[in-house]
Length: 284
Image 1 (cartoon, one colour):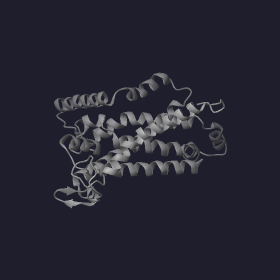
Image 2 (cartoon, one colour):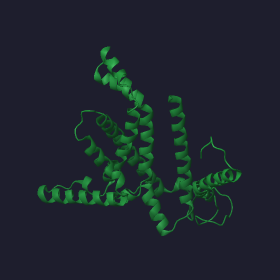
Image 3 (cartoon, helix red, strand yellow):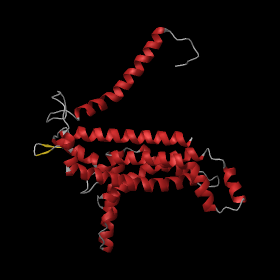
Image 4 (cartoon, one colour):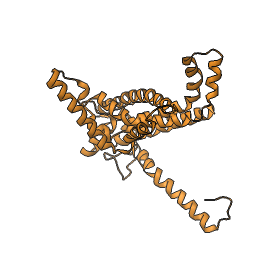
């Protein structure tokens, strides 16, 4: 919509209607899920049968709330642990990758950049199957040749971390690289001329400039890891993450405790997004 051009009344109404329908389509399912988290019913769907908080605090045999549901609480804790390690490794490796790709004399930059983007193009299901087959092959090789049983090569917590890291680190690299392209190199040169060492320049100047991008990349990495399903499905072991656990519950039939979990996740991610927006504006 070009604001400088005169717009007819019909066009303006159509544009506003389109925007309204778009946001209704986007947020209506979330709103319904949040409302049904307080529905006094044994089923996670309509009709509405009254208001209740028991899907959060209930502790009865026929109605266990999320705060007393040990299986779901354990899966949430597993997802938080996975997301923490994925975020930590991805931010460190992605930042180093961003520095590497900004080097002008770096050979084979285009080829490696293309290979780095490959995990984002490959579907998550294919990526999960490929990592599982690769790790299984390595596990069989180590067991047959050296009689070693390496737990990392079996579906497990750390294999999920490595599987998610394989594509989330690429996103971190892209986010940090976009910020790094705006960096004024003369600031580093001035600091070096004034006697600062290389580590001090990177720590006090470069990384301080990249701090908004690092925080944003860390938030994106954490959320993507926490909600990942496709890749995790093939790599998870005995410790199920929350998306896997919710999938198993929905498949077998569950209670509105799923809506309660969704409500808490929506509130949590919204607060995280608002905090990110606040600190970004404060930094600017």
